[in-house]
Image 1: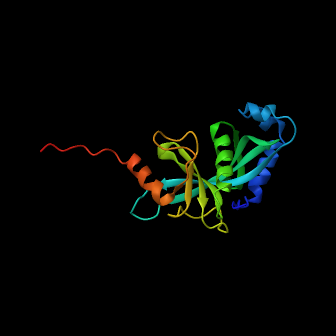
Image 2: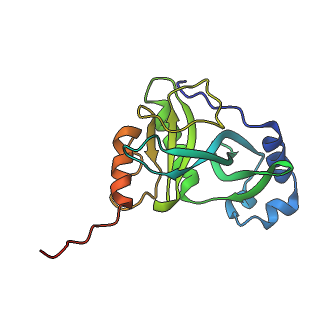
Image 3: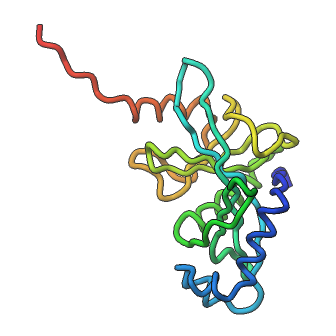
Length: 194
């Protein structure tokens, strides 16, 4: 398996397990598929969630910061929901359960990445300005999943739904995709009268 999933902080995992064990947390979650799951459910594939603070093409590396850890919640042979954790002043804490297209898109992108070959560390990278989430395949599988920035040779796989004009589930090198994203965020320059 070319994917090397980084270990989540133990308190983040414990907080998700505690939430899954709490009938109140599961019942109040707005995730019908989690509430309706038959048999045991459990967290797996912890992915660090990073947010791209700024997209740059040539003015230096794009900066990403860790905002949480996401766990896919599996029931049987597929994920039925996801659980997010966040860092608080007291440490890692459960944030919320959710379901929707990003859960299945993440699962699909991980299977796709597994077939790419090479050795990668999977992460999630959010681009808030474009309402975009990508699977970030970091080229250093032994790196600390909580740190680092997208390198030019890393791969980004936009998850569905992707912004208009960006193909979901098509792997791109960071060096190829960031210039496209930069253009998407650059306001059109007004033509000056002659």
